[in-house]
Amino acid sequence: MQFVNPQDLKSFGLIPELLGRLPVVTHLDPLDKATLRAILTEPKNSLIKQYTRLFEMEGVKLVVEKDALDFITDKALEFN
Image 1 (cartoon, rainbow, N blue to C red):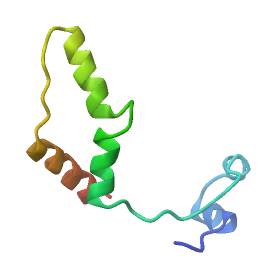
Image 2 (tube, helix red, strand yellow; image 1 turned 180 degrees about the vertical axis):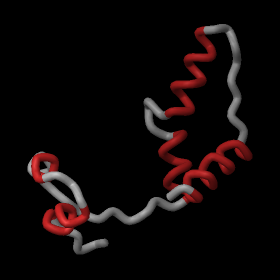
Image 3 (cartoon, rainbow, N blue to C red; image 1 turned 120 degrees about the vertical axis):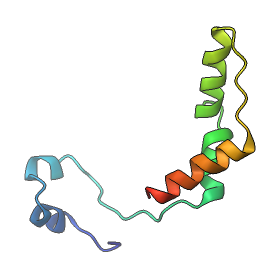
Image 4 (tube, rainbow, N blue to C red; image 1 turned 45 degrees about the vertical axis):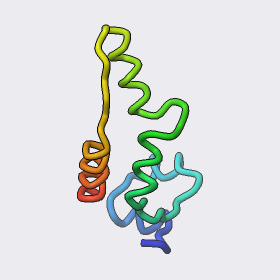
């Protein structure tokens, strides 16, 4: 997969019009559990912070426990 090129994608079945709109084709390594957890919690606009704020607007205090974050990251790894 790391040496994929547009011709490979065309033979796989993607239409040339779509391939022409992809300026760079590359391979990405999968994220590990710690990185997935950091993405969920650390950025200024992380999903956990967004949902906490949305619930606050409705008068509900949302607390996401460590076990729930572990479950979410485990499921993300399971689905690749």
